[in-house]
Length: 217
Image 1 (cartoon, rainbow, N blue to C red):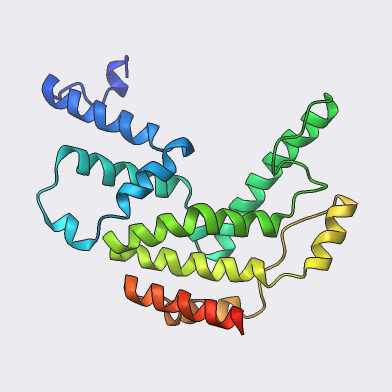
Image 2: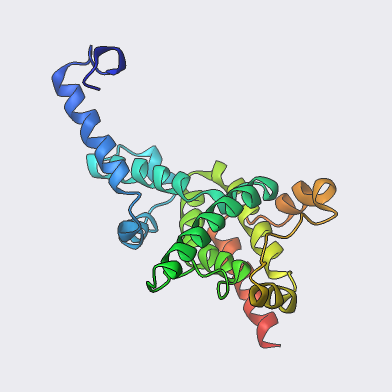
C-alpha cells in the first residue's frame, strides 16, 4: 500500500478511505475465533427482513464481518470432494506441528497428535459447535447460503457413517488418512442435498425435534 502501484485507494477521498479502512480492520479482526460466540449471539437476533431495513453503522459492520468470518471457516460447507481436499491439507499441517512438538519434548497441542486425534470425530465436533450454528443463522438472513447448509449436513453425515473401529485401528498405527468418496456421490449428492434442506427456522426446529424423538425411541 505504501507503493503507488499497489495502493488501490490512492484516488479515494480521505474521509471515504477512513471509513473503508475501519471496515476492513473490523472484518479481519472478526475472523479471530475469540469473537465467534459474541458476534453469533448478535446475529441470531436477526432475520431476512433485517437486511431490508435501513441498517445502522454497527449492523453493517456486523453483517460484513460475519460474511468474512463464515468464508474463513467455510470448508465444511463446500461440496464433499473439495471439502475433503482442504480437510486433508489442514490435518496434515496439524499433524506436522504435533510431530515437531513431540520431537522437541513439548506438550502436543489439541487435535495435532496423529496417534490420538480422531479426524472424523474432530470434524463432526467442529461442525456441531462452530459451523452449524453460524451457517444456520447466516442462512436465515441470506437465503442463498442454504445451499452451504445442505453441503454441511451431507458432509457431517459422511463422517458419521464411517467405521469407528477402522478409524481407531488407523489411529493406533499412526496411519490415519482421509476416506474415499462414497460410491454414489456423483449420482445422488445434489439430489440428497436439496431434498433434505429445511427452508425456514420453523422447519429446522421441527427437524431437530424429529431427530430428538428418534434418539429417545
